[in-house]
Length: 213
Image (cartoon, rainbow, N blue to C red; front, side, top):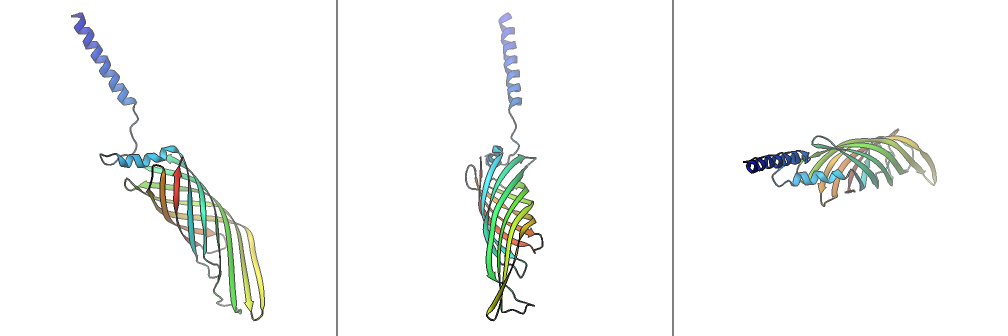
C-alpha cells in the first residue's frame, strides 16, 4: 500500500515538473506554417545588431542638378515587436554626379552642374513579414549632409563657376523589400526620396545586402 502511494506521488511530481518545464520554455513570437520556416526567418533578427551596404542611383527633380550615383553604409539595431521588427539605423553615404543640365531661362550656351553629397542620417524602419523569405520595410531618416554643388556657365569663349559648399539639413522617406538569401543575409531593394534643404528632392533606387551579427 505504501509502495503504491509512493509511486502515485512520484508520478504526480514528475507530471507537475513536466508541466512547469513546458511553461518555462519561451513561446516563439513569430510562426506560420507547420514547417516553422517563417519563424526561423524572423528569428535571424534576434541577434539585435546588423549592417548593410547598398548601391544607389538618384534622379534629380531640380533642372539645375545632375543625376547622382553612389552608396550607403548602415549600422542597424533591431527590436522585436508584435509581429514586426523595429529597426534603428545610423547611415553614412556618398552620392555624386556631373552633367550638362538645362539652360532654360539663362543667357548662356551651356551649363554644367557637379554635385557631391555626404549624408549622415539617423533613421527608423518598420519591417513587416510577408512570407517565410520576404519582408516589406517602410521608414524615414533625418540628419545632415555635407554638400558641394558647382555650376559652370559657358557662353562664347568665356566661362564662370559658382559653388555652393555647406552642410544642409537632410531627410528621407524610404520603402522596399528584403529577401532572405542566407542564415544571416538579406538582399535589399528599395526606393528612397532624399531631400536636401534648398534643393528639390532626389528619387533614389537602392539595392544591396544586409548582414546580422
